[in-house]
Each structure stands twice: as C-alpha cells, then as structure tokens.
Amino acid sequence: MRISKKLLTCLTISLFSITACDELSRFSYENYSCEPRLTSLYEIRISNLKIGAFADISSAKGQTQAEIISLTKKVIIIQSDRQRLIVNRDSGATQIFKGNVYESVPCIIDKFKM
Image (cartoon, rainbow, N blue to C red; front, side, top):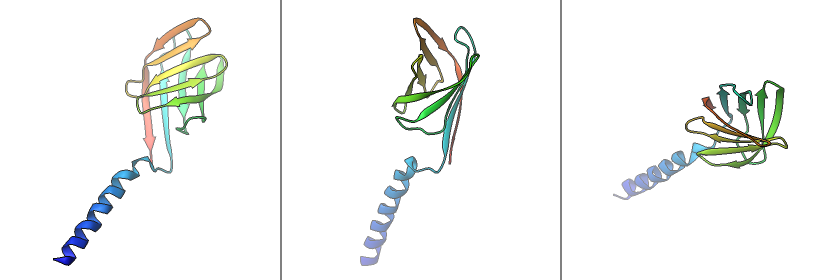
C-alpha cells in the first residue's frame, strides 16, 4: 500500500509539471496577413511574444518595427511613433490608428510554437 501512495504522489506531481509547461517553448511566432485597404497594412510578424519586444510591420510604404506595449491571450497592442495596432489574437481582426485615421482590417492568422 505504501508503494501505491508514492506512485500516486509521483504521478500527480508529474501531471502538474507537464501541464504547467505550456508557456515553455524554444521558438514561437505569430504572423497576421492582412487585406490592404486605406492604410495598406500587409503583414504583422511577431517572433518574440513579450511586452517590450518588437513586431515587424509590412505596409505599402515598406517595413517598420513597432513595440509590443500590451499582451494578453486575446489582444496584442503594438505601437510606434506613427501608428497603434490592436490585434485580436483569436479572430485576426486588427484595428489601426494612424494619426486621425482609423481602420479595421481582417487578417489571416498563422501561429507556430515549438
């Protein structure tokens, strides 16, 4: 009976350890391919998912980098000196605030985690 208690305790601890490893990964990225419209936003590439990291933004005017200022499971907020992007991580819908111009564009999500 003593062996089975130790085995059960070991299995329980192992189960909690495995389920807690969801946030541990060697490599991950999120790409959002968008439909260009008024603001001509083509793609948002994020390879480092943490606050303070930079996202690569492709538009008709070229490529720029912007800082991730907020990150939750549902939303990423990216801001540069010229624009602010609010990206819905579930639907891909992206709100763009550029000066006094506002646009909402649909984007296709491509996520990879290893």
